[in-house]
Length: 252
Length: 261
Image 1 (cartoon, one colour):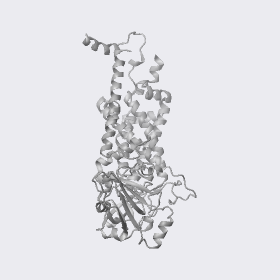
Image 2 (cartoon, one colour):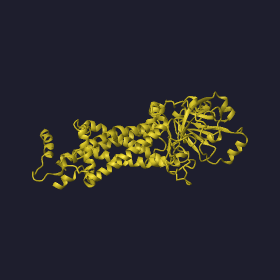
Image 3 (cartoon, chains in turn orange, brown):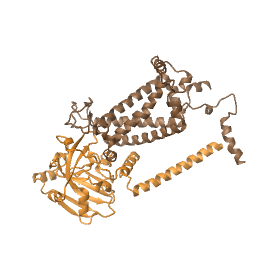
Image 4 (cartoon, helix red, strand yellow):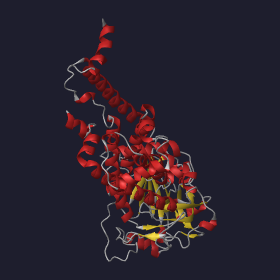
């Protein structure tokens, strides 16, 4: 072995060691500042982590584009929905008067809200674009109460890191980080285009996150849990989506 | 002592010990190691993006112009293929299996790797002079005469001389420049314009394109252009000599030198 190749070998070794320890430091910093998604494991973890971390850094406070009323899609598009279960049909027969949103986990005052109670808070509206991962999209006016307002009412603990939200369909749940949860455009939506939110669009209550794709906007919301870790939920990947092969973070 | 040693090693490396046999290492590489490595990483990423991109299109093979588009609106055009979603009217009596989950994970992972690889390639091309020496065409080539010679040689499928085989002609240079500095930036831009989170931070990314659905449609057209480039590129490699071109891009050595030694 001559000097040149020995030097090359040493430099390569040093570079590799620096690279590995650099990755280790990056992973620790990423975890600390909430830049690592829960589905970071596996072969696609690199791409997911790069997407989530870079978008978290760039978009923490940015607002989704809002449109004039003239750009509202007529009629609003309602995608196919999974078969509605017995529990839903019972509540629908009673015109959703018994629909409840329960909030628990890392909160001072666990609570259960009826739809009129949710509507008693000052309502907000946004005319935003909803894009499905499949490729289609529509613009609608969404009316609801900002999630941050409900979280203020129940009083979340300072160590809270995620809000897990559940549909009445037991296989349908998802979660968001606090940047999205406290974002002013993250709504618990109960109205669409000056009307009640139709069942086809997720009524009577739907999570609305205009900065993420349609599938994060879970329909028929009945339950929120505030947590500091996603480990205890499902397979610990943050939502039902990664379990079905789809990314947890859908800001794309 | 240490000083004389440090002067000696590059000299030893650059002068062959025997004049009769020219070792392969002294023959300048047809393609530098960086060009070769980034070329093959980009190739793998492009194929991954292509397969996953086709899978994603299958879930909604309709294209629109403007901000919005869905099954209730009139498309700009439809691809005559079946869909992986039951709600999309395709005219086919069956629905393909949903492959979007892994396709989307793979699409974005390959996009990240090809973007980082492309940045490494462009920055190092500027530093090493690869861009100036090998890709920017000579002024004399940028004339009708230069073009007509290059086009005539292509049309006659003329095998290139040894000197030509060691550099790019004007058509190749312009094609590579368009791919690197027009098509790749466009496909990245239109991809980002479809991200609801990214456009919330930089709305102009999508508004100057006319809307999110316009961005999706342009993304398709640019991708088709890149696939056409890939097709022509592979055909030209076959005409120029598949074995020697592949060897040049894998090992850096050309067939002519291998034959001579």
